[in-house]
Image (cartoon, rainbow, N blue to C red; front, side):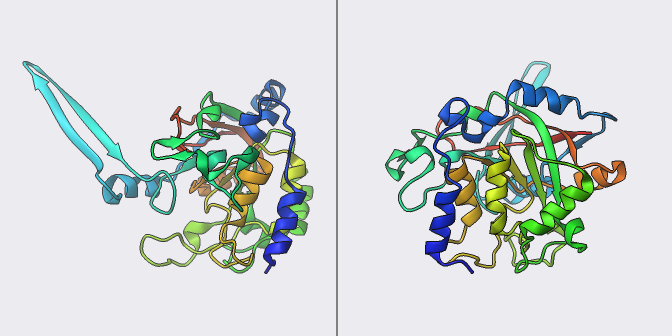
Length: 298
């Protein structure tokens, strides 16, 4: 376990102060037009895989907190129209697959680009909301299938995958990260033992010794099936080190609660680790999250 002082040193070491385009984009600025064109060129078979978590979506609609999905019917004469109102959490275990904006977290009183909690209001945040990502995201996806890397059905909660194993996997796959890539991190969470009701199944993801590699690789987004952070503490006094490092220090946007099992099967069948990846966040002013359905095209 890292001491908090050691984590602070890591936080400082991977912190970026300059960006290739508008600062509000953070690491999305690495996803240039050229990077998007390279991503389109990866399509070989046209196979489409949706990575939204259907079970999480069902939970939001049927068992969600608040009102969930409320349906009504308007009618007159010979026509009728079904209307709905959806109320749901955008973050946490009860949320569906969603994109975390850079304003989602603060550490030691500071957020991304020097923002402070004073910028948080009852009607949203004043900066670092989801709007900069809402123009649409199209780039190359790169899959890290952690269960395959460690030859297990899922990543045990107390055994995060170290950088050396990631390097070995990528060398074998003959795939190198490129600036602007979307990193898809599969932990095999659906295959792990069931936790308590309404809680994530307990898995780990990448070891914190991968932080410098992620930062150096200039990924634009990390897509995870488990939110990256393990339920087993790895830093004293910091329960969500990956969220803090990615969102605040590196400016990398984060997708939580994706379903990457079908994508992993498709990549294994086609013997590849890269693909075209697309996300369409909603333009929600002041919100630090948006529901998304990450789509991969192989």
